[in-house]
Image 1: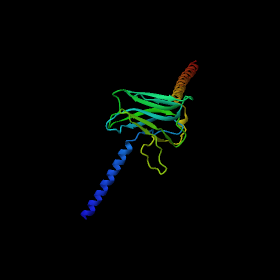
Image 2: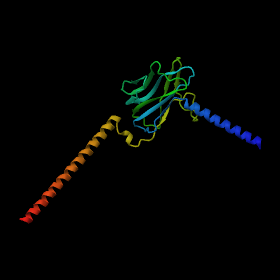
Image 3: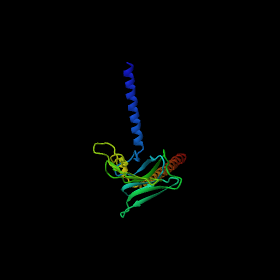
Image 4: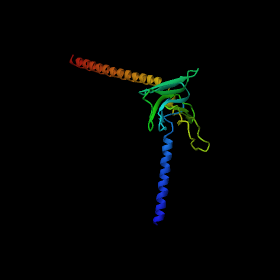
Length: 218
């Protein structure tokens, strides 16, 4: 009985250990996330970049983009960003570079945010990334998922896109904001005109009542 219990505990411990090791390995990959991303829409993409080296820091990250009309980076203290465009003025890559002393050290990670779109109208989109360390080492995160579904050693950051809901095609973020402001202005004008109409109606009613009272007195 004790022997069986010991073997069960050993197997359980080994299984948990394997799962933890697997989770640790997966979390060490460069990854991209955007829970609200839709096909053909605009979204904020978050690229999470961990430093795997035990002796060097991450000094720059370059991400390849699938030719986007818009790509805007969020400022990060100590880092500069550059968006490269092709001859058609489409964003094809973005590079974040650390100032001296701002690198991502061993055991740390950094998140880089990019507001981009419209995203490709397909189920998944990959963003191959190049991670450079202070010791000169360069890691290319560009391997596609294997046909059998297994994960490669250096997988390219990949995002799953939801089917377009209709809202995602409403134009650029600026156009959407302008449309919202126009709608708000129209609503305000309508409420103001409605209020004026009520006041005028009340004044007219008051005048009518006054005329009736004067007519009866006379």
